[in-house]
Image (tube, rainbow over all chains, first blue to last red; front, side):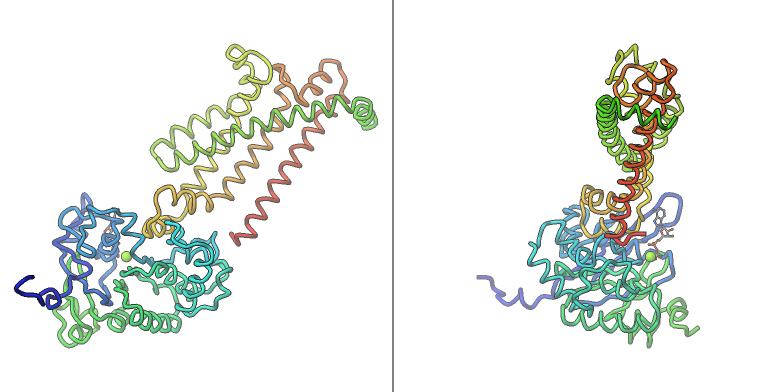
Length: 255
Length: 213
Ligand SMILES: Nc1ncnc2c1ncn2[C@@H]1O[C@H](COP(=O)(O)OP(=O)(O)O)[C@@H](O)[C@H]1O
Ligand SMILES: [Mg+2]
């Protein structure tokens, strides 16, 4: 028995992602990430915004170990990414990229079941059932499972991309400008859907965007990046009411 | 002339059938070996790009050696008969396979490879599930040109004592029997056309079922 039996339940929950003083340098140019430190809480929806080339994608790829830091550490669920089984880590994290990256030689159903298929996690009946459920979750008709990506609209493909990332019920989902290529109306409905989905599934989302309205609308917190550093990391309200500097004001269209 | 050719087919049908089967065997074995070597080599240099220029360069140079002289060059090494013929056909056949496999595998969109890796695929899984299926139509095109080329070049192999329809061609030449030369050539052309047709059907079918470009 410890003297403080309740301590465990009183302490702050451990952040699900932690960047500790992370630096990434490609030879011959200034650091892409420059002593970057921040944490993401479990169940949080974090949006990331900044000029193109400021290091957002680089930061994101460090969470699933597609890139490793030159110095500093990235921790996911308290474990240093640099020393862990990257294949297992990646399978446990949802990943949605800029141009969706659906495999055009596979049906929608096969695409959605891609990650489970890598570890043979689903048998055939499970696959049929889970694919149907996931199509429900992202608001697509179940008979889309047998279609090919080329037979879908841009917005529908985005939904398949999200369903694919959600297949193994990941605790974390990484999204790199996922709605960049769809029209305004489709984008708005995708945003609403993603919000709803995040609330029901309680998945932690890191969402990169170059659209400040999208960042403010979706994020519990918004991280503004510039030149590989965090300029401001705060709730949308506080970002708007108290922009930290000229760059944030510029982003908001205030200056 | 045509009548003479048909008369030959009729009177010596067993012989022509025998040559036809021998030709298919000679070419079939060569296609199999060249196909496997070319595929493996193409994948290897697509995965390890720094070796690509050297390997493709060597293939290109070998490809420019006239077939008759390549056959001649192999005689001191392997003697005469089917063995040097198959070797020569393989050396030719590897080139289109390597080139197309390399092109197909190395031009898969980097985005898709990144997505596959980011979702936790091993390198093998990326190769088998993403790169190769996406490179399939380019690889098939390479296979097609290889098959047609081997069937046609296979006719010359009789020059160093290999079996096959080339035997009819060379016998026709030495006996001033043009009809016999034509009869052999026509069968080779027919075989090449049929093989090409079958492969193009397979290619179309793949594209259709996979709704690919
Ligand atoms: N492999 C690489 N080699 C050299 N520079 C790179 C490489 N990858 C990315 N960069 C550079 O890193 C910077 C940040 O890129 P990125 O993280 O993709 O920015 P963002 O996603 O914010 O637009 C860019 O200036 C880019 O040119
Ligand atoms: Mg980017």
